[in-house]
Image (cartoon, rainbow, N blue to C red; front, side, top):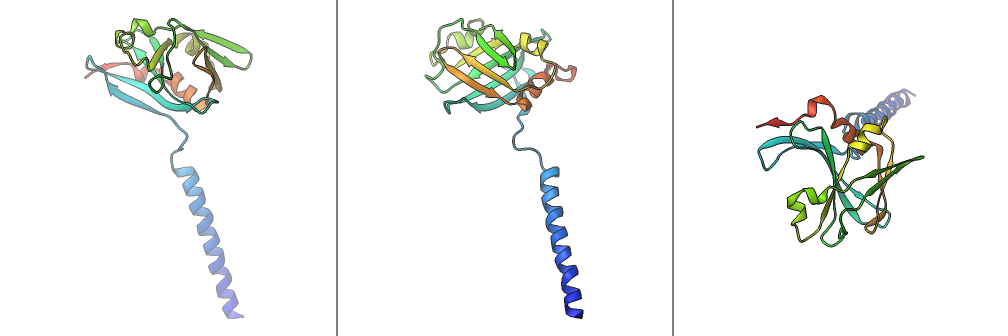
Length: 177
């Protein structure tokens, strides 16, 4: 009997240790599904913060979504959508349709105002004015993007919307190097 008494606490200790390790992994490691804000140096030497995430549309094509502040302290935010060469060919201007619940937003195409994108023969990126969406969103709701002639449904999860909204906070203002 004494042998069994020693085995039970050992089994309980192992079970406790396993449960502890599982909880530690779940609660102490960062989420793998989070996009990350990045600080990058622009061509003019300014440091700016952007949200960068790769997402798949319902046709399993991958698109890169980059949200960032345009210029220094202008308060204008841009959403750049990047596809592999040849997948984003479209006539400009073309509005990006954003849908969530009962609401729709129509974001203006500002691609041609960026000389680098306007002169790029690959036509791999398009830019849209993000301010109307950011000013109107009051929570981190899932969104669906539609770009006529390019993709019909690109889901944007709430954690990406949260990052876009966080770009408008004061602590992410552009700074000179």
